[in-house]
Length: 152
Image 1 (cartoon, rainbow, N blue to C red):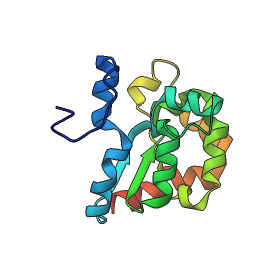
Image 2 (image 1 turned 60 degrees about the vertical axis):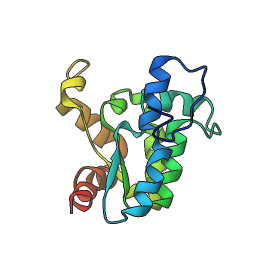
Image 3 (image 1 turned 135 degrees about the horizontal axis):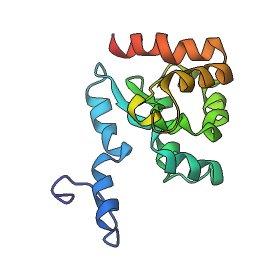
Image 4 (image 1 turned 120 degrees about the horizontal axis):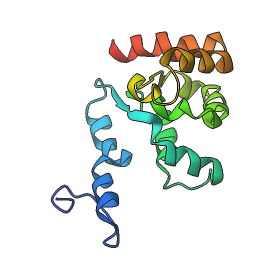
């Protein structure tokens, strides 16, 4: 199926890695270019694994966090959400740094995956913690302004 979809992959990948290739962010570039009026949102800005790997090696250009970060800067119709990934407060500072980039600030959507957050805390506490860390301006942008823009 990957061959039929013209998606490149390493033959040494396990089944989970092969399946992930269908959702690889770079495969969306032709779609983003062909349909500039259609908004696309990459969930979780990659994954918790991508965020951890990015903190350890921010220059790894094959990391989905890195790829999505660069794509956000180049595609006006691309967005990402933070969702349950940011339940780990270790990532708050990374988010705040990238919200300082004007090309990224308007492209991040607050999301909570409340049913997942509830396994660790509460949605309300998650929202308050993030809001307190980011400040009112950043929080209002990702929780109010960006979703309105994304949804038109």
